[in-house]
Length: 298
Image (cartoon, rainbow, N blue to C red):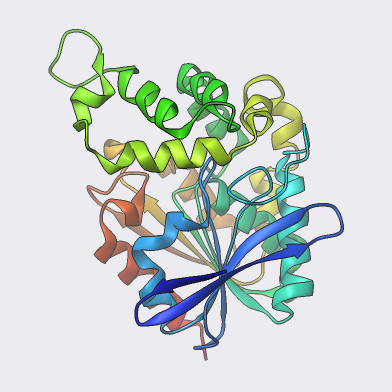
């Protein structure tokens, strides 16, 4: 399947890890390989806003994690280690040469685990506002527990996409300066593209992928320990931190600890930019990523 992104063409295709079929998009061989790992409940299209620029300079690959997008589903098999296994197989068998890896949120966690597991296949890593400890990730999920359960109930494709989008619009949310909850559709505007985007993601999500975060976190997050993972990564790592005051998930305390554990760390904090990074403020995010990648491309 060819997807037109002027001035180039991206090809969407499938890769079988031996355990699950992974859907991915690939750009032209414009430079060294660059693998983009999306966040939880998203798909490779989460990088649409910066894909053209990156694909003009790098050989871009964008896989959908298992249980996301058009990739296969394996009920109850959505541990961090499962995502890591799939990505390692993709790097070794499909990319087949050392790659740069950019991960956002969940993708950033997986990128770190992959770099620790198979350092010979990773040239450098960009961690886009991911929680750097299981404790922080747990706290984030706990704070959003009601929303996560709501998304789980909408996921899987049993409901038409239009109904999912309407349910999202009707969901109550808190807005600064208002005494009580308001409809999300009223807060963001009925025609906001956010609703179509979220509805498409959820229809393509396996509900079990969200369920394990709610009822089996310990098993899901097993192996994500900063003191064990980070020292095992020899390559350069950019910690791309969103602004905690704007909803960023990577904390200042975590960053300080991580800088002392990584062999070759770089830290960029984006003031005023929220967790969604390039989907809110494209220019500073793209600049930080490309500056880092170029500095390690030779």
